[in-house]
Image 1 (spheres, rainbow, N blue to C red):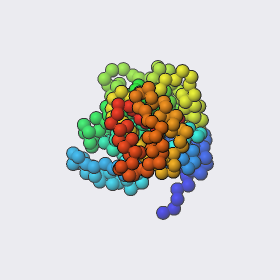
Image 2 (image 1 turned 120 degrees about the vertical axis):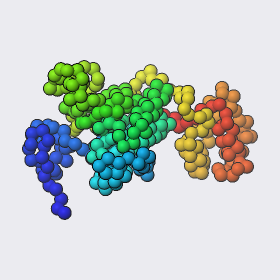
Image 3 (image 1 turned 45 degrees about the vertical axis):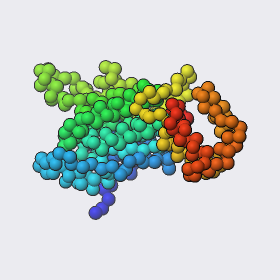
Image 4 (image 1 turned 180 degrees about the vertical axis):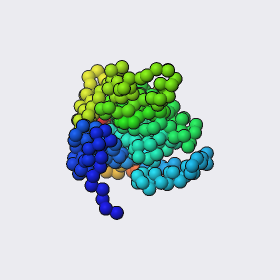
Length: 353
């Protein structure tokens, strides 16, 4: 099959050379209409080169309700996977924007209309929880027709699950979350995490709403404005913070992330629930890796000195024994110290960058 070289603008009908279109971030050269992007294109545009680390790529949907309409749900999943090369309608991972590390989730409308099923909800929730543990800001790029009807109530509960994870991230850990709304963002996604951002950004003329225009007109029995449910209409009525053209989105996010990162009088959050006391797995792993490479004695000494107020102290002799002990040996002082810390009431985690 020959490679497609041309495409047509949905807005003005102009015939566009795909090579030139990619160079302009898939924005029409004639009318500035923002054409639809795949999730991989968005990642390539936003994330610094060679910094993307995908998460939970192994998760894929099942068919808990054995749902069938014109064709079985399992067949629809297979078709969407073969067409897009994705397991489900979202890609998540860790990467850098202008050198600033973030946790990024990007939805893909080409996979069953970007609908939110159990896997989409689980991947986004895991991403947020991972970002909370590592002290990273979260950016979610939303494009979706809403909850996936083929999974029934299981898809609807993802709204609450993601919102709960965001509550801990934003209001307990005091970490930032930016939502980027693209066309279309509707249904259960709009009704949950898309509208929970500390800052909510959108692309120009994006379709953003909950119910469809026709349903609202029939319910209200009145004609709605022509620009109803566009990003410009929502900005005017206070539901958005910024409208950013796609070519400027990476730079805008970098400046906002830097502003939040360097903000004066910023208070570090504390997770009061939802995370058990003791060592986080990431911190435990990092500590073991550093121990194998011989730990920095001066830094470790400072760490123990700072813990004296918590009632956790170590004599000079025991400290020297600890420095000489080996990781992996159950009888070593290092392993005993880890067990003691894990059972203590002190919360240990990686320091926020």
